[in-house]
Image 1: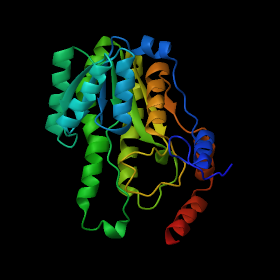
Image 2 (image 1 turned 90 degrees about the horizontal axis):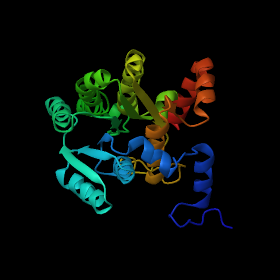
Image 3 (image 1 turned 45 degrees about the vertical axis):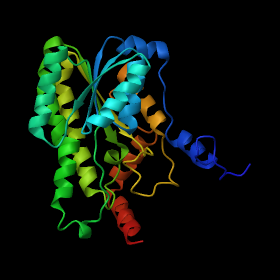
Image 4 (image 1 turned 180 degrees about the vertical axis):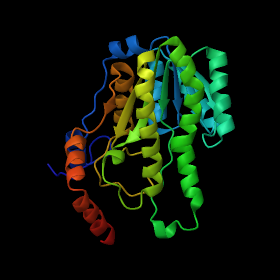
Amino acid sequence: MNETRPTSNGRPLAERVASRLLYPTSRPREKSLREAVAGRIVLVTGASHGIGKASAKKLAAAGARVLLVARSRDALAQVAAEIAEQGGAAHVYPTDMTDMDAVERLGRTVLAEHGRIDVLINNAGKSIRRSIDQSYDRFHDFTRTIDVNYLGPVRLLLVVLPHMRERRQGHIVNMSTWGVLMPPAPRWSAYGASKAAFDVWLRSVASEISADGVTTTSIYMPLVHTRMSAPTDFSRVPGLTVDEASDLVCHAVTAKPREIAPWWSAPVQAWTDLTRNQAQRFMERAFRR
């Protein structure tokens, strides 16, 4: 068989095999997922497209009441309509995660209207791949990514966490990136720094809130072929589909592991920590090429 022949989902066979080897995913059993989320209130940011949309639809199908958050009211309304057609329950909350006052209102509004948030999935994100010499007059690249990827989620959780801790129940799922575990790569300074900031923030806070019954899962997601990653040509790079990535989210909600990461990330991280200078030189040579 020709290894470049597309499969039924449009991806070459070689890429699908490499993705399965590098990024094996775990789909929870339907019964387990329903037991975990039926009747629960689940807030999903970035729910209008991609992983957020797919995750919200799967959770709603399992019986969760999903609260959909993104900027576009029309896009959210479409997702809510699709969920309703499948017999699920969804509520729409258009919010710009770069507007801190709006994010605070979001948290207070959903708590007032629903009384609690059982699961919060921090999925909204902004990605920028740009070299530093093209960023000297683009400080807004850094403020936008830090607002969406770090400050916005922090602002929301500062409203929600007191209620979770008081109820002694709640779970937070953060959509991080495997890049946080790897040596910093060229052109990803804005994105990598903003994702690392929230990753460290949440892991620090997790040690304080665990005694109150509030748990966290950090998903160090590998490449996922979405519209956010589309501006960079990753067409030949092994990665997950949106459906596979949303399975990881459902697994996080069901099993509540502390983290989900590619199996090879720990040994690679250990090796790069021991050989930091060599890893940095490798990145420098790769950038020059």
